[in-house]
Image (cartoon, helix red, strand yellow):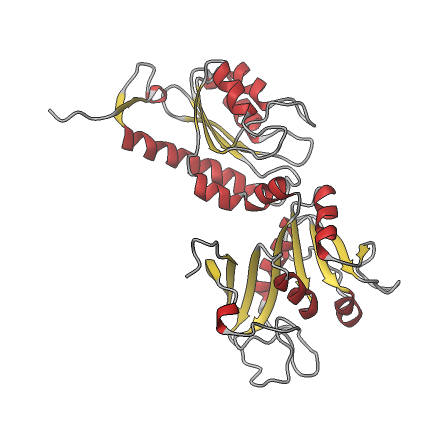
Length: 357
């Protein structure tokens, strides 16, 4: 008889059942998917805390609690889900997208809440790189006799939490460069008019990006030309911190704002130290080129309209010297392509060395 590797899945019933490893892993991933859904629903309200989701299963394998991290100062996802589960959590399993904290911050340690709830197994998506956590939560749970499994849906959760993970590892915000352009790469007509290149659905989605970002940055030239408010109008969410490279006129709608000049790297470090997890760069073309040319963009979000300017006298996405030769072209990885009304949203990230041909 062929020998099979087995695992004990105690959360399926009050008595132990034996399942093949493959089946158990699939079940874990299914529950973690639901925890990711909880995290996604909290995306725009938790920063600078991470947007985390959690699901609790009772001993019979039924969901008895779920939740996501609230705004700063409110309960983390684990506590929300465990409170919803109540006594049914005892002897059950907790699925959480990020390693539980074990230190006192604005709220008590989540590890303490997990121990008090009496769960016997915790499944974690990714380890928290924050120096106050960084494996300490996992160690504390295991030291208390709780079974801890890690790296469940780690690739997907690393993508979901990319801005937070990047900011904690580097100290700099995760930089998202956003632009709207025609399909031939033009951001305005020859006379400078640009409203509206894309339709209402794309503009609403752009405001979702603003709501998810802690700060939004433009150049002083854009402020003088367009006088943007840089707030969240189309949809729910808080207004981001407004940052201007250069000086904004006293009457500009962007006030109150941070006005900064000089090299970008120190500015990013300052923003990161101030708790900015994600920075949205909205232009103009000179600022976009500066971030791109210095390799400071972590994600490109292009809204592309099915329209043609049809000439070379219209401004493009970048203003500055381009690649001198085809070997110098920046190669990107397409993360997603989404149709929004008649427009497309294309999200891209820089390729890693392993992905570069």
